[in-house]
Length: 226
Image (cartoon, rainbow, N blue to C red; front, side, top):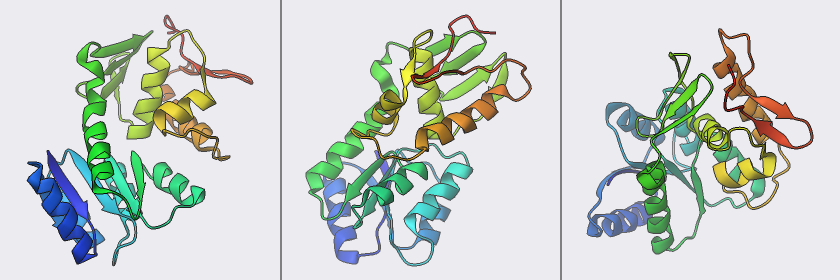
């Protein structure tokens, strides 16, 4: 895999890079946020590994800019901060995973492999559809009534869960578990915020709300909705 590593500690960066290269990966290592941002714009990677606290632009800012630029590359944030609020901030910024220092190298490798496998989704299902909404899981595209809709990675994953469970309620807890990998309730409005953004994008130009709110339960998309 082609990996980008943002890590300002030379010793840690060297250790991680050597280990990943020994496993056959192509690794580009930079020590500053500005350098990482430039690399992300100039090239494509299979996984981004971003240290949160680096000189200049921090890792979260790099990630936020990448997501604004519609970069959907799976991303792992590395951080010395283990608080729930810090983890939530990183995930809300668009991170797919969060690894607290110090960590075992084998755990980093396992998480990289897990993220690289995530888009495949068993290869059995390529398209998801409900009513006039269609999702292509290979191209990572979404259309409603033939109108292309640009989604951020989290929005895409939420919509994927709704489409996979068309005509069934997807609860807030289910979304926290399947989209954010939370095994607990972080007591934030992270789900509601992302649902609101997803709704705005799906409904622009349409008079029918694609997402139904089932009060006290969760959210649903009807299989035959128009």
